[in-house]
Image (tube, rainbow, N blue to C red):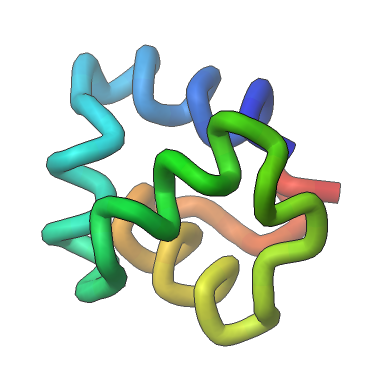
Length: 61
């Protein structure tokens, strides 16, 4: 999961911190996904992340 998120972040030259702020979710949530502690983030989190990155949820399939 993180690889796909990171790919989108790299395209936009943004950080996980930026993503958390844009998505309105705790920074810790982003880094939990990154460290594979949150293997299946909630649908709501993924919608917020996709919206912040301005991509479709299909990107994360």
